[in-house]
Image: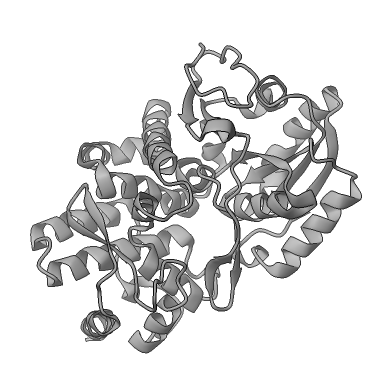
Length: 391
């Protein structure tokens, strides 16, 4: 199978293995493809060679992924004489830190990797974000390849070039835009994910339906059990539709000055909850976003933008998947104060002139960017929401 895509500086696209599809991210000279299908990890070295070119590769992964998926990738790169080094990092959001970034940059430089080399991110969103950031600043920018191993990374974070680390002030506040050269989304790797992590990634797929594709959200309502059961066709549909949706938005707005902000539906609330929870296992990213989406829809109901039936449809679906929909469902103690969450939101990357930017909705598939929601309105809404949950 071949694809019609922007060539830019790329090697002409080679035929794809049977059952693999390509979604182009059309960014001119920096265009690249997201390849989606089962069994891509075993072919990764050959696909990198044929689509990016022969290059020395530094693999970056975490301890959990390394146990399951590192050996075949290392062996394949060794076979072609491409493997330069592997860095295995601790798992979890706390790895997205200044310290880990500095150590990773030093390890990459120690290999002597040249600007024509590649850094290969094998893992979920944490590994992809950190590795992409390191690749963007080592030697003022080397190429990198994403091999996402989680559903969240396959449907969202591996595509679009956002990289970054967390700080005490908030999530992803330090980072760059640095597009990968290639993304290999091997859907077979998802079979090894813990159920909780898989559900956490599901919410990012549901987000694409909620922000602009009502038909896809309806399909998820009817087929989420097949997705959760790892049905191959259902997974291919979820990953392919999500990636195509994100690729179209990124092509229009690469650096998040307009339409790309829509991808943050539920994230303003969600990122504040993650920071409050200390970026810990207490609250996974997707769980925070699920609660954030429900809060966003409830806020829109209070603002008169949408109705109770729409809110309940969203809440019912996310709950059916097994995701939390209320702050009260976060385990481990007392709920946050409204003051705390609003203060954290004030550090959000999308703040403009001290005003919060929210993604609001008029209905399922009808999202829009708003910069005129007063902080006092958000504070009052959270106070009521938290009070109702404590009652």
